[in-house]
Length: 298
Ligand SMILES: C[S@@+](CC[C@H](N)C(=O)[O-])C[C@H]1O[C@@H](n2cnc3c(N)ncnc32)[C@H](O)[C@@H]1O
Image (cartoon, rainbow, N blue to C red; front, side):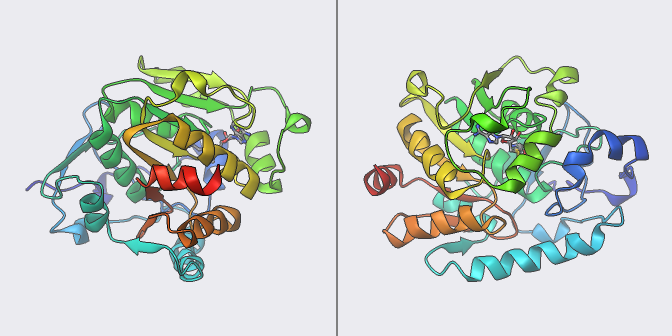
């Protein structure tokens, strides 16, 4: 099996300009600074799960100490979530009924942009592939990194919702975290999509707590929640996600183990008997137990 996603020798360190341009993204200390080797559009990787050790990381800048610390911190936070099983990638695939022998997905290289960590992107791409051809829905477009990733791995539309570009900080419907305000103030919504347009990405604008989700009810194969991270927002976003999921749909949350509120909410759901799994080495959690979530929080 061919399986080389990382190739340190071909990694290009981030230049000052790129770092400045993507200052918001680079402040995301949870990210490993690994790079995917394959080029844009041709980045197709066949993964052999028998050889996960072939994944190689390269730490590229002075934040590498934090990068080392992040997984440890994450493991610590996850250890506080006794109700949630943290499973390895191959178990996650089995739970998602994805054939673990051959996972093929596309991973874009976005000119130095650091969004989700690479292992998170692999996981999300694999899940997206398995839910194709249903549309995907994402809350939290930011620069558009995950919207592009999803669009490459789904033969259908990717709906991606974010706040308007202008500052709407006083108009939020629900309580939010100050860390969310910092992200909102620093982002340039969909900036990556400006020079990497994707035909199957539909950008939607609005506050996820007041947005009208009814046109998406019962249609979505993968619902990715990565908007505001307060407990109230994650709860509300999850409620909308279950309403939008088609049969067999999967909800994926970012920042499990990385955000206290996200972790607390998911832990409570798991405590109510909802089957939720964290994916080891990532900040992702997922659930296919949509009906039970619906019953638990409606
Ligand atoms: C962590 S970023 C998303 C990153 C993106 N998914 C990626 O990895 O490429 C969170 C995004 O959620 C958006 N956001 C925050 N609160 C929101 C809300 N109430 N409704 C919709 N979007 C929101 C922010 O503007 C920000 O762009």
